[in-house]
Image (cartoon, rainbow, N blue to C red; front, side, top):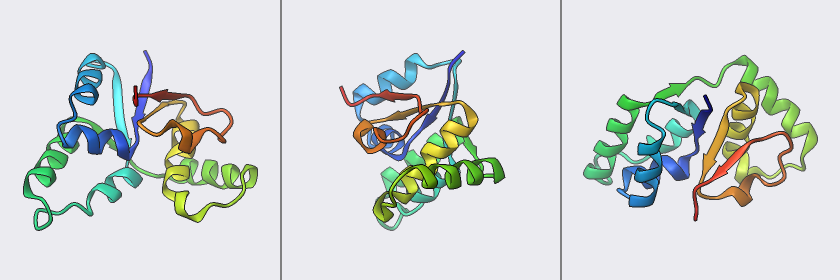
Length: 129
């Protein structure tokens, strides 16, 4: 069974009710689906004071999928990844999530596969089309 790690674009699209993303998530029923604590921290910026419905949808998603800690193995994989790539500060969270997916042997699911094209050894599932 494939284990999936959802990036922020996928979780956000699901929380916004994007039908293609919701349909793909529904097809993963029974699969090992999770997101990273790094992604979850990004999503926490959408508080109820900003958008009550969206914040509630994000909370519901958090109740139905695992939120994996960014642990020592993930941190070490991130350090290794940074040694392989040129630094790009604006993409640091994406790179942290990619390193975690790679360390855990999970397929990274994203709507922006081009953000990860320079990362060797990362299995990506592009949900943009």
